[in-house]
Length: 238
Image 1 (spheres, helix red, strand yellow):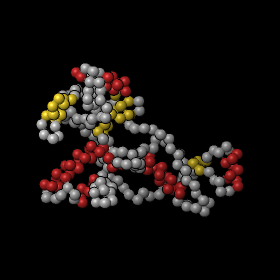
Image 2 (cartoon, one colour):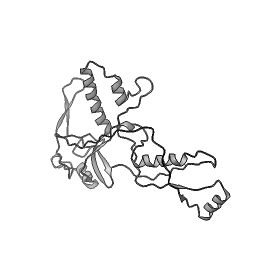
Image 3 (cartoon, rainbow, N blue to C red):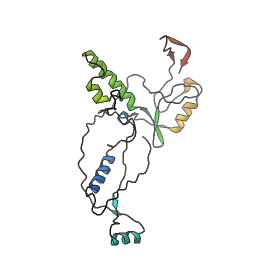
Image 4 (cartoon, one colour):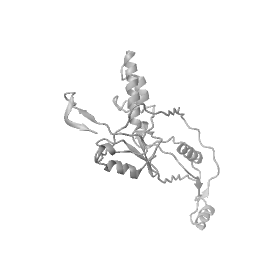
């Protein structure tokens, strides 16, 4: 799931420059291929993950007359780079992968509404198909709430160093502290076509909405008045 794009990374190395540059580039290639590099914000909550599907290391020598002429005669064609041992990574991750299924209906609301449904499941692209998704931020928030509940039971506070080390502090103590725990988005194993998705959103009769091939059904809920804590007047949603 996600978006595919092409990326080219170039490093200019002087003739008597950094001899570790090729090894550093090989390290970057290896870490991208195993999905260990993140970009952008909210990286510890499932966002910004990159995975390199195919890559090649090439080089050209422009520091000598012979290298410059060879490159010009070949029409700017790059030559394959000689095999090089990547630099050693400075840190190691512990990865825990869990395959599970809910025992009760579960979904995260998308930012769109259907013609009949007011709350539809959050979905993400998977090639030409769609999958339901639980954001890593939602899962991480649920884990943090349980961790805080356990610590409070033991007589410790929610601002305990264990909590801030695992989940970060959001800048509450001045400079933001990065979280040690990263939680990926959870994607459904089944996929649905974009045509079925559009059909379900366009269906006005709630009882006939069907997100095939998922087992789904519409449910009626009464919104809660945040001020009074009771049922909100005329705020029934599906």
